Image 1 (spheres, rainbow, N blue to C red):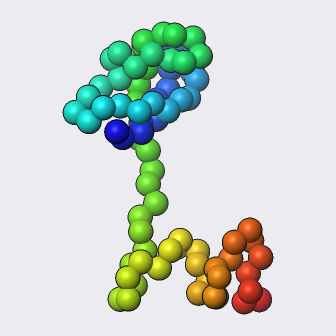
Image 2: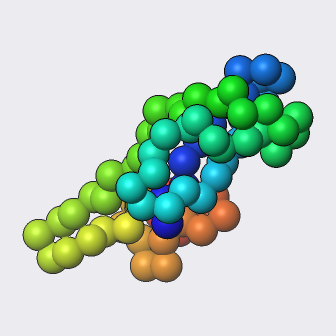
Length: 77
């Protein structure tokens, strides 16, 4: 099931909802904060996969160091 982002038009709350495939409308996706059904689906940004010739490289900010840069501590400084 895809996860969609919504905004409530009544209380302005942002929320996410799992929506069955084929049902993309927001007409009956209630706001979990106020219960209103006046909601609108937001346009979500996705992070594209970065592919090298050898296959997936991991995150786009990968410095290439063995073990990566987990927690912001890069082995290559």
